[in-house]
Figure 1: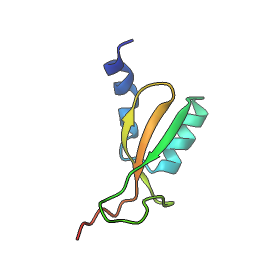
Figure 2 (figure 1 turned 90 degrees about the vertical axis):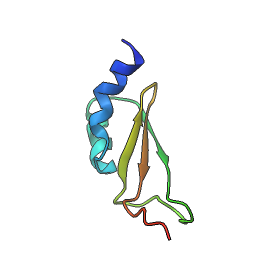
Figure 3 (figure 1 turned 180 degrees about the vertical axis):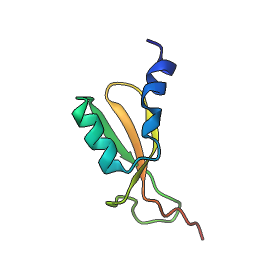
Figure 4 (figure 1 turned 135 degrees about the vertical axis):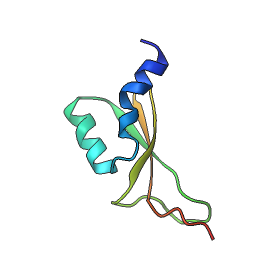
Length: 73
């Protein structure tokens, strides 16, 4: 399977709340890791209401997550 096909299988996770994405991947026994990102000048983006903003295929699957507040002053 090509990398493009692997990515296509998981791209539907983009926009999911992190909690739901984690539950789904655990049910499917998919190894994954979470990487956090944040808007410039923000102290932290690790929040309970975080969303998946990107998915990188590989082993483990990588979820790039951020808080929904990306207002930049």
